[in-house]
Image 1 (tube, rainbow, N blue to C red):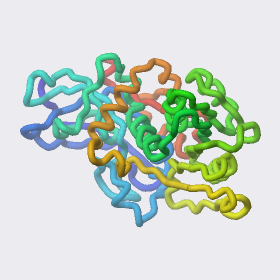
Image 2 (image 1 turned 90 degrees about the vertical axis):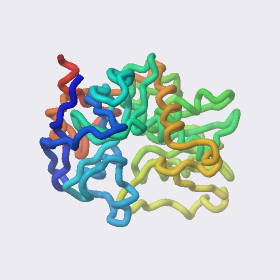
Image 3 (image 1 turned 180 degrees about the vertical axis):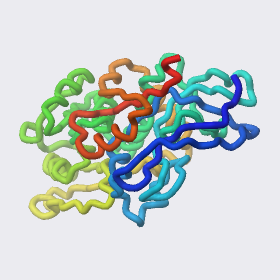
Length: 331
């Protein structure tokens, strides 16, 4: 396979307006690989905040994606879910490998070989777009520290919440409920082997609550479901939005702990032995179960991405993970 020097990339020109732009790739350097993209995924929560221009100026640097180009609020090339095939490399044995990379939406790119992660043989490229969310779920559970036999409530039935609940349900003795206001999430929960409840029917006095709804009401529900001296882990990020919380009422009497989790930083207990690469390899290995295909709710071609992103940022509906398909799949 011969290296190709041109690419087409998704750019947010300004909040609310995006387009595909042609780019010239820098020459393939020693130790780099060229990846032809097969699929990318839209991280709906974070990418919607980016699209709407809701990244606080104080977080511009901390929120940078690994291969981001440009600056917030725009023009910016942003994203971190890309699955492709190595089409050029120094080492012949790398050619043809399917890989995951934390790269923006672009049909072809060149990165250091260390930046790509080979897919397990039994993980199809179509499902590997869940890797970034699985990595966040792993980090969240490390922060949450669930214990054998815990009653766990996960508030928010999006991709991240479903993955957290699915992982937690595999801990012996744990009773896990997925809580969401959308009744359609009951079907997703059932496919994953999870118990589903609306907020009013959810079991109170949970030993651990994980919040992943992306809404202030969801975080209020999470606090309400927590038992005495329980931990409430906040996985959702609200960008520049202010979030009112009921920290009066029984919050102090029940001695609740509200803790944040963010995938960019490994928990202290893991740092001596784990790095980001090992964590992502674990995430890929956990995606080999076909049941997780239920979390991919739709697909569009790369050419439609500007319109798709605008729609998801304004009216996401029942969307979970939305997959973007690239033209080389049709060859």
